Image 1 (cartoon, rainbow, N blue to C red):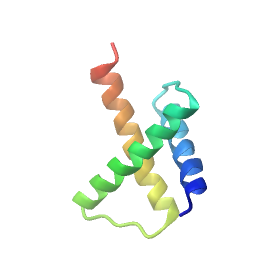
Image 2: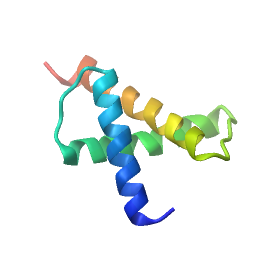
Image 3: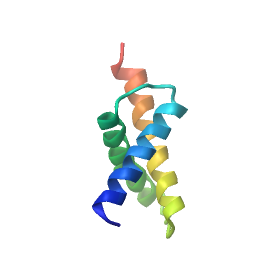
Length: 79
């Protein structure tokens, strides 16, 4: 996937995670959440031996990872 597509999808995933978790952040944080969520989601999917050969599956793993990052942030870091 190209860099521009990765940036757009990462930002979209971060924005969606923010809406799902009812958390409001800026564009840069949304991109970082999407990127971090992608890494975390892929890692967890590999641990569970779940593979996805589609863009929709990759976005779902990224979204789940981004939501998990937001959950951890809201529960343990944010006061």
